[in-house]
Image 1 (tube, rainbow, N blue to C red):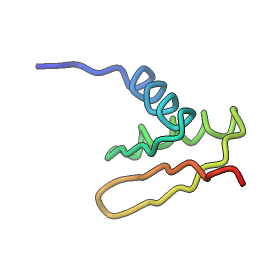
Image 2 (cartoon, rainbow, N blue to C red):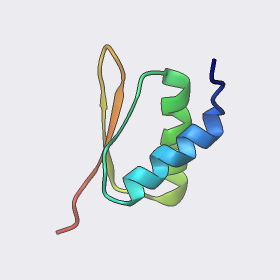
Image 3 (cartoon, one colour):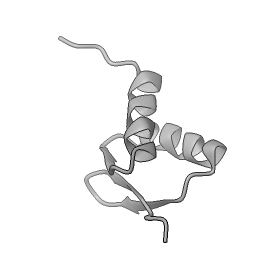
Length: 62
């Protein structure tokens, strides 16, 4: 059985976003950690909250 650190997983997802890739999480708690970090870093990200999880999609620079 694997035990994941929420903070470490959130940081990994943030790195994906910073590199221009989308990130998906199922847990609302993890989504909240990611949202806070996105706000702190002032990243331009579209968030899609669905019934099964949360997508964080970086907006492309024009």
